[in-house]
Amino acid sequence: MRTITWNTEGQCLSYIDQTRLPAELVTVETQSVTRLADGIRRLEVRGAPALGVAGAYGVALSCQSHQNKETGAAFRNAIETDAAFLRATRPTAVNLGWGIDRALQNALREDTPAAAYDAALREAQAIEAEDITLCHRIGAYGASLLPDTCTVLTHCNAGALACVEWGTALGVIRSAVEAGKNISVLSCETRPLNQGSRLTAFELHADGIPVKTIPDSAAAHLMRRGMIDAVVVGADRITPDAVFNKIGTYMHAICAHHHSIPFYVAAPYSTLDTGRREADVEIEERARDELASCGGRQLMPDGVGTVNPAFDATPLTLVTAIITDRGVLRHPYDELTHSDTREMT
Image: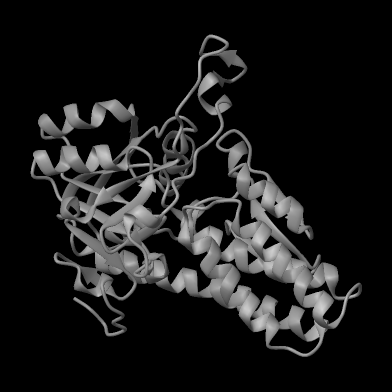
């Protein structure tokens, strides 16, 4: 089972609707850029690597929909407009724009709409295949950092559902278990949309990896009691001074630092954004209704406003190491201030 892939028979994009989990496993199939954009906004498909794949396939869908309608400059303008529309759906995660750019650049090199569609589709499929390989590499590097027996805290969902089929943070855990280590997991519920309890716990339970869900606010208490040995999270963007991840990550990093617990970030190299600083990155603000109600029950009085950021920024001074597909980065994180394509250890 893959989170997101191309249906060659139906010539459409197929992805798991994560808003329906864990109660239902429902797959969305679409040939519409507008439908994909709506799915991204609604978090039907989410997670930095999966968004990179979705962005690339979105360009292919655009080429597919316009190839029999426009030619020349009109065709190029149409797919560039669609690309900008998709890019605006989630402003904080860097992989979405990265995937869009890779597919778009390949499409725009071609002379005909049909060739552009083929080029965009090939690039999107290549990104999908790459994600599987890269996540297994991340897992192998990260597994070596975990003790033979330990309890790992994770936040939000950085597993197969955030990628294609293995995961970043959960890929580290899966690879450690595969290597014979005795790993148990505490999955923060991750309010307000509960990606930890709905998605991370769903994945780990299905894999037979011991997992318990905790309230987000219980992490510091459990660290103080010695019940957490390491924290492993994913990332939506990493700049030379900060890690952007699901809101609440910064809080866990502070608590881990106070209790001398290693705090690891697992992400593909494509998530590194060396050209920006924390101050340059827009933090996505989510809608009031995510906090105001749950399961049809009203949780707030009418007329009360909200502040609902989707992400926060964790200073790199609080990060023990960044686990990438090219190796483990450590303080002072020189690789984030200049390009370095060499293998790292």
